[in-house]
Length: 102
Image (cartoon, rainbow, N blue to C red):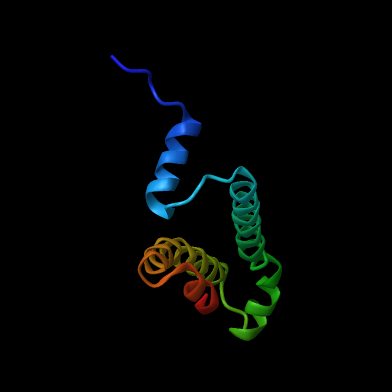
């Protein structure tokens, strides 16, 4: 029986196998901070729809509450569906290109 690999050695070996380089904690921390910032930006953008209710209400010539709720639901549903699609496309075409497209 061998010694179980630690999370650090396992992630370093995966990193070395994929990137062919040395695992750098500083670069990993920077990447984590950037990704966390992007998550908060997405949450902020999605909550910006709520203050726009009055604009939707006037634009659609005073629709019912269910229509406004449908618009909000469609927006959030599209965001939910688009996230994994853009993730897969970024795996195929590259993250830089997809960030420019998004």
